[in-house]
Amino acid sequence: MIVFINQIFTILEFAIIARILISWVAPHVRGSRLIEILEFVTEPILRIARMIPHQIGMLDLSPLIALFGLNFLQIIIRHLLSPFL
Image (tube, rainbow, N blue to C red):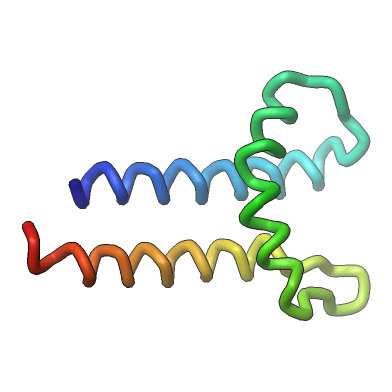
């Protein structure tokens, strides 16, 4: 169970990192199926991160906040499930 949860969080983290890289390399690319999937998977997480003040000048820190949040949530879930495993 812990391995599965870790894999889900790892996939989410890689999806956010991929979205960051794509936004730097090709910020105006739309219509690609891969980009649509990345946006579908990451947008709910990033939307929550954007509720926290997340900009320093032109730099958007919401993906960084989302990654920290995912790591924090993963630690909490592992801690809560550890007595049952």
